[in-house]
Length: 189
Image (tube, rainbow, N blue to C red; front, side):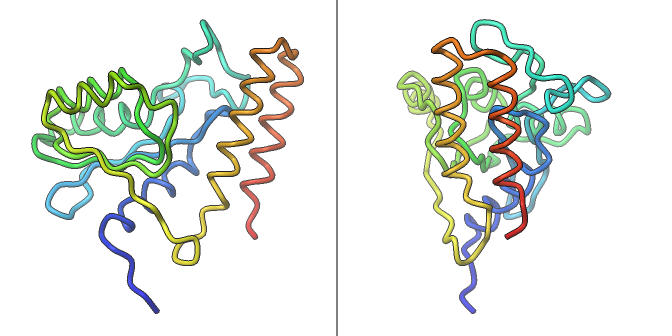
């Protein structure tokens, strides 16, 4: 048996957290680590006690679900809620963070961002990380080491559904496609 690296271990934790996501558009997980110890984790979903997208569909405004709190923000907010400092920590995210999460990561003092999959990587995000001296690195997981029900294929399917949504497909069709793709990629193989 080959032992996985620390980066793969923490990234696998993020993928595990993503399985708790209540977003039908994209399941994302984030793990904050300091000194090789997990200090917080988060996944994308609605506010605690709120209505979930998996139950009532996404609340989309300007092509963004406003009901969802991103995984990175949930992990950072956990640290804030429980008084856990994030200065100098690292974050492992299943997908490259959005601009808002990039700003929050920088302001929280996170020094390294590890991500598994490209996702709408904005050039300004990389510019901000560079200005703030935040290291960014992609971490790949060997499929043989950790089974993740093929998130790359799920991401591809979700991007196709988003394009269909932009092309004018009905909300009912979109919801049905997201549910079906989530079911297909959530089954234990």
